Image 1: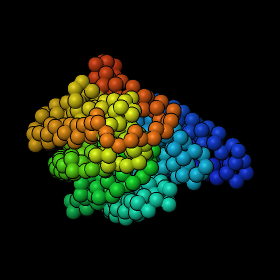
Image 2: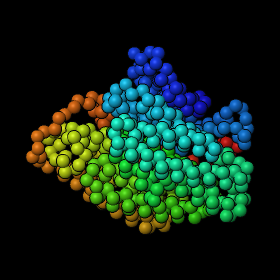
Image 3: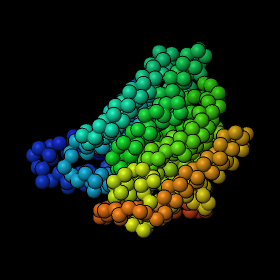
Image 4: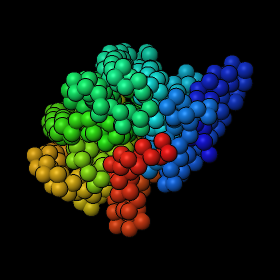
Length: 487
């Protein structure tokens, strides 16, 4: 199967849904479901090629001039992550919005197609193009529905910061092309080190700053708390579970492919800003009274944790970063779905107003307990396992300060999640909240609980553990990537 189908399927959905709305409105719901299923199956089929490796150059051109799409263990892993996240968010969106807001689903599938493009592309120019399609769709879904001024403001702030990030990405790509005449990542990995040192520094600096802003890494994180907390619950889950991971993937790919060869100091930079993001994210989360803003700042901290894994500059660190990305996706999407539902029932996102919710909805509160314990790193859950791998990689890299920060972050996150749980289990003096039936979200939360438990069991299964470290080795294997793209 050609990798381009993973991009074409959701793109086709984005263009076809308006036609169904105009000509066959009665089939709009079926079209959203059908296109979602096709996009999921197509992307999974492409991801299945990751183990053997697959490179496709559009139009039969050579990699030097054509558009290369690359499927390997690393891109396949993030395709799987994105597919799970988009599928969960789509199902939650259908229950939340119904099939009426067709514009939302157009933007949703556009962002899905662009995310797959980011994960598959093998050249910097198309990486920028897919990032821009992805970003425009993301700005608008954050602001949906437009009658919510808080969401519109958050979407505008996201737009401003996203534009700054895009400008830095474009400058880095332009300088790379001016210095080498190449945009293909594999070719750049060979020729960029021959450029003047000042040019290399500018290229790497611009790309890193742009990706820091896109991923919500400190100090480019200011858009993230507002966007995550103001968006509708299915969008908040998607933002935290998938959208920031696209930028993390690019950092992971380029760190070992381009940056390290040109300037090995990049790993120290990643460790520094990863540690800053981790510490600031947890400290800010500790101060929040709004449960969704608490979860948003927690995402800033978890992105920092992932960057520490990348900064360890080893296959083990890369594997830990990928594993933690999956764990964060499952737990944080579950946390947003549960918190959003409970806040909706209570008609407030204020943590103090959520007293007594255990007696009202014990299943959701217990699910929140599991997700919170996992993301905090309580043994033997999946978050603990990925943080343990991170600590081992950090110790091997002699990155002791980031390792201490990861351990301290576990204590801090456990403390602020305990504050939320204490409110849930405390008696309430107000009337019981109105409970809305949510059969789809019930299934989604149950599936995410199962996924979190499954991820916790993976390190004990030799086949999966070996597969995880194979992904880390693929990320770290610069020459292997070059040989696949330029045989």
